[in-house]
Image 1 (cartoon, one colour):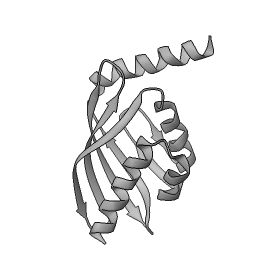
Image 2: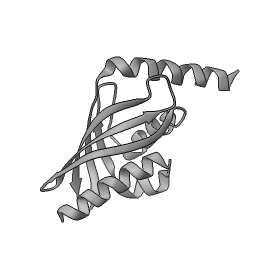
Image 3: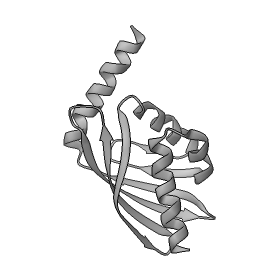
Image 4: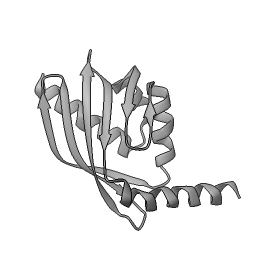
Amino acid sequence: MNHDLKKMTLDYLDAVTKKDLPRLERLLAPDLKFVGPAMTRTTAQDYLAALSRLTAIHVANKPSRVFVDGDEVCVIYDFVTDTPAGSLPVIEWLHFDGGRIRAINLYYDQLPWKGVLDEMKRRSTEQMA
């Protein structure tokens, strides 16, 4: 089971990188609970909508460590952007239930992310103009 959860976690990160929302939806429990420094989401659909907004700046996820303990996985990776911030270290603590991700706790340093969020906002404004 541990190998399966590691594989599912890496598949999840790959689906985010490839912006493959249908694959992501299959990996997430419908009642997913996501908690991060900047937001909380209580359904997979809300989480997917938030992820889709990140596509303006997101290039890749580059995992460096994956730790499996029972039905929980901790993954440390670089969230790679095409902004001046470049790559940002991120930790996700995933809880699996019934072969799907039931909960995600996201951890990162908010200070470097301010520039990324400002750039997302700028690009969004340009698209609307």
